[in-house]
Image 1: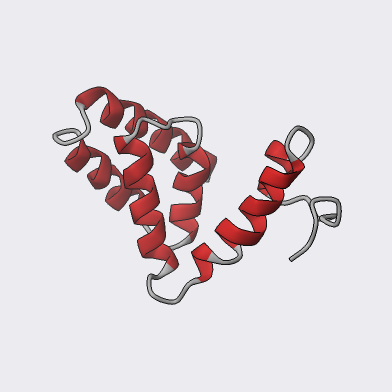
Image 2 (image 1 turned 90 degrees about the vertical axis):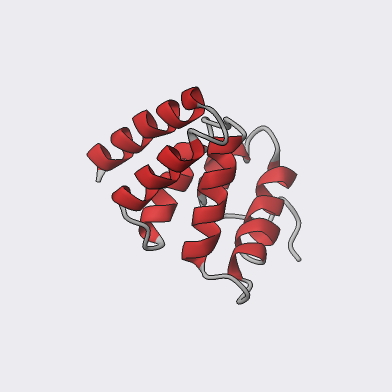
Amino acid sequence: MTDENSHTKSSPTQLAYGAVAPKFAQLSDDVLFADVWERPQLSKRDRSLITVAALIALYRLEQLPFHLDRAQDNGLSGEELAEVATHLAFYAGWPAAASALKLLEKSANRS
């Protein structure tokens, strides 16, 4: 395990949080993305599907664009992600799904 001052690369978490919370950025890189996301029991595609669904259901829109892009990198199609939001409209609420779909549209336009 490294300390928070030993990260020299500019990971997305380092760029987003490193200046204000270096330990948070380090834990995100070393534990969340380098350990949890790499466990073999679930594929990265499945982890992305779960993460996107949780973010939509919890209305955590600030984190959603990063994870929508990551989900597509991990093999989920825009059509599948739209279906996740549509399905969740009935479980997490219409506004949560509608907001997620707007962010998915922006993500698709960046690609």
